[in-house]
Image 1 (cartoon, rainbow, N blue to C red):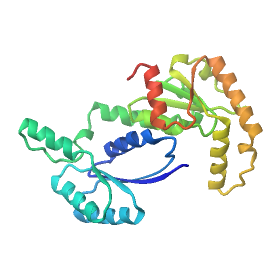
Image 2: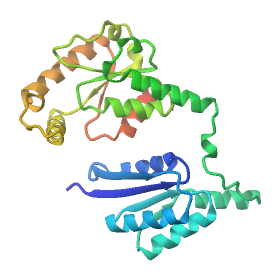
Image 3: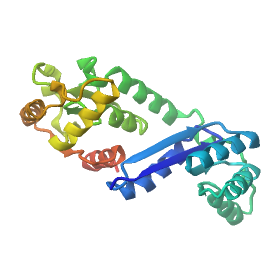
Image 4: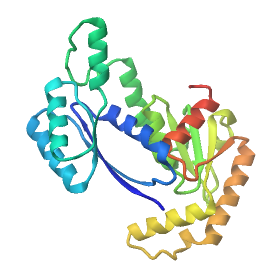
Length: 270
């Protein structure tokens, strides 16, 4: 049976560190844990904010994962969570304390130092903008400019995967495959080693598409979610990737992080 979990990520910076740690830990509980509601609270600088967040977490019975560099703020979060009988995990505190003792130095306690505007930061922004510009086949010219090209039928996590890889400074273009539309010629000109086909089981895809239609307020028996349509799209997908000669990755029940790591390992980038 699938279980639900609410996770509050609290940070005095952008919250990316806490989010990565939370998702890495939670991925160990898939597939039994599919429904995870992440809520991020970034740039939290006051005890009043922390008090409000803890009250909200108590109402929703959420786990709190926090990355706060100020010792007083961490201590206050710990005390407030304890009073509310909530589980709260301090990601940075133990590391800062240990490093401080080892070096016999006091920490700067300055939020966001890791995100200072260095060359890596600008490369990440460039990759994110690239992923947006060349998302969902908007402009086929991006195919030959990309570090990685993703192809797949609708609802195979092409866009979130492109964004995830972009945060690792990798430029990604993604192309949707549908039987009625001929793929752009650039797709057959790209190096097959940097192209990846994303496939999903027809049963899982059927379920995802039905949920998508319902979320849009549409009938769940539309052609988009029928077995015949899905089988037709998957057959077309295999026809295209066979012609490209690229690797195929099954993303059924896989977290975006898992698929990204699979791709990076195949490219020997990790």
